[in-house]
Image (cartoon, rainbow, N blue to C red; front, side, top):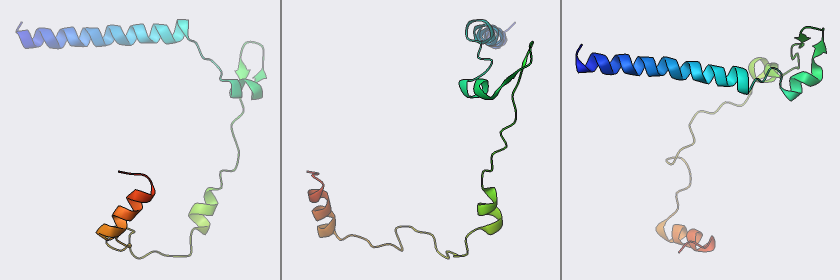
Length: 99
């Protein structure tokens, strides 16, 4: 095998081993089966917990069906805003304590 093939094979093997070790750590050492919030609303059914769906209204209608009536034609950028002169910039920086 060429040197490049050995490096690719070794890198792939290390990736799989790292993925396996990470999975073992998550499943055995840090099992987070239910968050605190989920546990508060979970129903204990003996061998397992049933967690009801979060059916809160997220007010998407306000943004997608109602929307804004006001339309903006131009973007807000440095070309259509008030530009400070050199003296105004120096005065502003002096007011906030910049030296």
